Amino acid sequence: AADPLPPSIQLYGCNIVESPLIFASPLIYWLGALMLFLLISLFFLNKEMRKNQADLDRANRELELRRSIEDSISSAIVITDLENKIVYTNPAAQVITGYSEDELQGKTPPYPFWADTSVLPATLLGDPSKLDPAAFPYRFDLLVRHKDDEQLNVLLLATPFYSSYNEHIGWIYMMRDNTIESQSMNLTNDAIASYQRLLNSVMSCISVVSHKPTGTMLGIHNDHYTEQLGNTADGHLAISRACKIPFNPQGSREAEVWVDSLERWFSITEARVTLPGGSHVTLQSAQDITQRKINEKELEDQTNRMENSSRLITLGEMASTITHEINQPLTAITAYANTAIEVIGNAPEVNRGQVLEIYKKIANQAGRIDKIIKNIRAFAKRRPTTLENVPLANVINDTQELGKLIEKKYAGIRIIYELPKVLPNVLCDPVQIMQILMNLIRNAAEAILEAGCTDRTIAVIAKVGANEVELQVADHGPGISDTMKASLFTPFFSTKKNGLGLGLSTCQTIAESHNTRLRVRDNEGGGTVFVFDLKICS
Image (cartoon, rainbow, N blue to C red; front, side, top):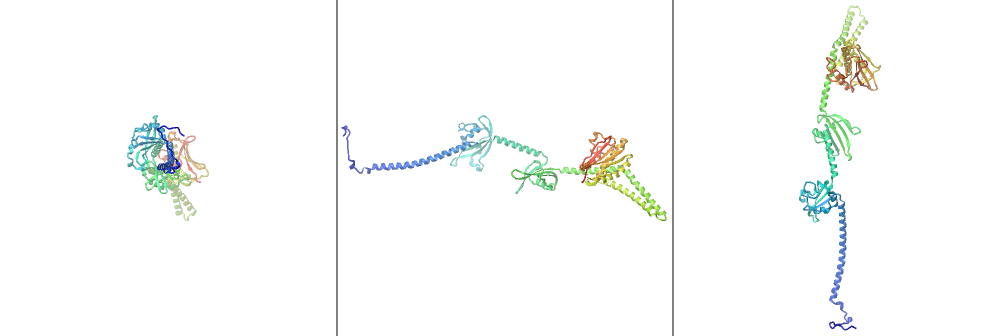
């Protein structure tokens, strides 16, 4: 039932049971196809959206990781485009420069933190395609002005910035505060320079040679080494090979060596050192002593001449005494020979015992002459110092024989010998020790007679110690002042009116060759004592 409808509306009806082909309508077919397409599209769209979301999540995570890495880098990163406009900075850039990312974004040169007067590295490098890729990144040392006006020494690394299409789109700069390292480097350079100046100030050839299986290599060396031996290890090795003394347990040795290849003398000190890395080096200090050796040889020759002159002077001064000493036994020999002639010629029968006694006396007198001549010849003979194991008693006995000549030449002089019962063997040159004693005895005799001293005794004293024998020549003469003592052993210094000043200087040289020194002191009760030591031989 329905209320009456307005005249403008007409109502139609049909029996749907009587229309079974309604779904066969083309409209319904296309609607169904559309729905199926939409469902399939929604399925693939949803799948793509989930994939995109996963890619987006992965990209976000990668972006966050990269951002975290950039934030964790202590070096400042500044990226510019080709116009040198800043397009990116990391947090470390704010720490080094004091400027935030917003303050630096879009800035063009001169940058607010750029304190160096040089141009940008990008300007210096130019087109990266023309540069050697193996040389990147390029290193620069520059100054950075912090926002608070503090200046920092910065190490800057510059490298080109490429797009994903390998297109050069800008530059990447990495900056690291290098102030402490720079200061350390300056200190190290100063230390190295000071060390090099120190080495160059040494007037010896200083060199270090490393030893490797592949050979030797010259390391640290000073200018003196370069001037004398060149810039190779050859000079070092030649000097080292010339030294025949082995290294001691501590790995060092010292010697004076003649190097044939260099034709020079060197005084060397060498030390073997193992470095922390395990490599082995030899440190050598070699000083050229060729001129010193020449001077020493000339001095030795001069000393030998002085010693010989001193001995000859002594013998010359005693020439008359020596002549008298020889004439006495010669006169006796003549008398004994005449007596023998008379006995043999006048007696009808030769008294064999009487003649034999006469010949014995002649032989004794001839032996006396022979001994005097041998002592004089040994005393006057020039020879190099030779230290031998010698009985000291023999040296004293020979000195006594020559001392008798002193007593006869200088009337009133008496030489006494204060000796222990047993004298040991000593290490000495007997002739040279006898020369010292004779020189000291003669000097004492002349000083006593010149001063007119009443006590004219000269004492030769030997005191035996644990390792040495102390020999003394003591007198009670006028003595020697302290002023003169300071110059007493200087060549050509003499306290005598006509003295040459060679005697005591020569004696001191002889004493030094025996590893001792001649010393002088005042004698108790007046006079002078000269003392020197000789080493006892076991």
